[in-house]
Image (cartoon, rainbow, N blue to C red; front, side, top):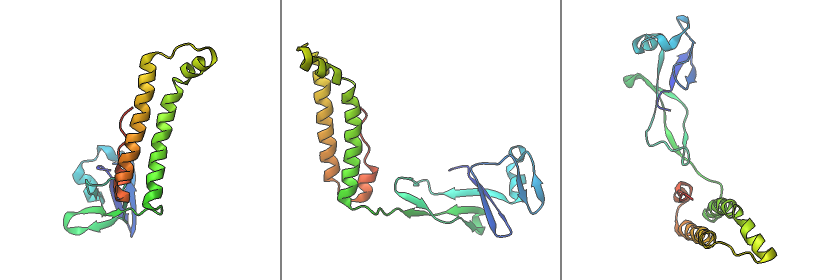
Length: 162
């Protein structure tokens, strides 16, 4: 988001993710815009779009773009997201997401367990330990998420690396 640019042509603001290859201003079409200087871009009406560095798409939406004359930039304000789910529903969703990750990891070694059930071949100790660790981690994450008190905390909770 840090290099977004925008131009206002007769009240219609066009936003670009960076300097576009070409753009149209009141002066006409500008080709090969990436080779223009910052000054030339500004003179043509292409200005930076400023978004707070606190922006986190997990918890913020962006407001409508607007012009800030004294800074000669366009801006988009952060709007705190609201979630239709209840706190408990959000918690359940995040916990289920993590359990899915854990289950995918467990599936990688399920064949040891199945082989053991089929013909009593021993499950290697490191595999047993790894599987127990995954279950412990799952329980820990569940406890940690359940202990959170706001929707924002639940959404921002980072799963541990597995």
